[in-house]
Image: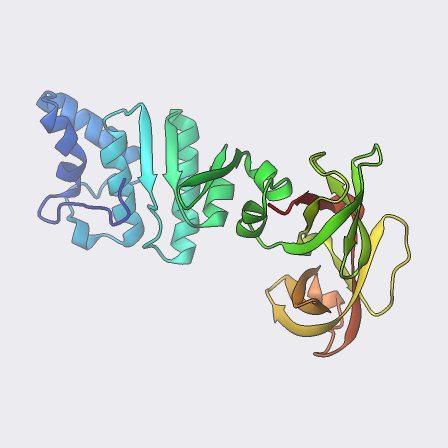
Length: 282
């Protein structure tokens, strides 16, 4: 399934979908039955005599998908199939593709630069950079347990704090890391040892922001100043300058209960040890 749909504009929707069946010499009745069955599967029943130019972008994408599915493939390859669609339609068609894939049980390779698409559609994700496989795993693994700085930075939004391991794991999967903001404690996958250069990964939604330092056990705390705030509906995202040229992002949920911090306000960002992850810097 191509990014630009590649539908034949002079053919009806029915003939676009039936084209592969005709090449494979199916009987007229089989072609009719299979094409109509597949059009019904992608919710295009009743549009079979229209032409591509008479359909919306989302409908055209369904035609392209139906044309591939009608041949009952062993493997389905989708090359950025939703990139030409508006955001709202993209979410809708994305859900339909996932539902179809589960219903039909077809092994599907989905090529995309959209991280949200990858996370919501996939059973497993392969992250590739410059032709090299960086990591392969479940969406949960890639988001919560990145194995390298590229994946940590590429998948979602992450705060990456560089440092050096001061001591090996304490037996509970935690390490002390010397950073430009003092010694911080982080969980680790077990691949870090004393003196290793590392990066502590902290997701914005796991961090908190306050006007006073937090001395609670199990929390890391870093002082900073608010440099920017973005209202994103049910979330306010703060950019906090913490020094060393780093901006620490913090997501505050339910902003209607939250008094916004003004620009330049001195604050503290804190995050639990259990939601941070130390990974090798290289």
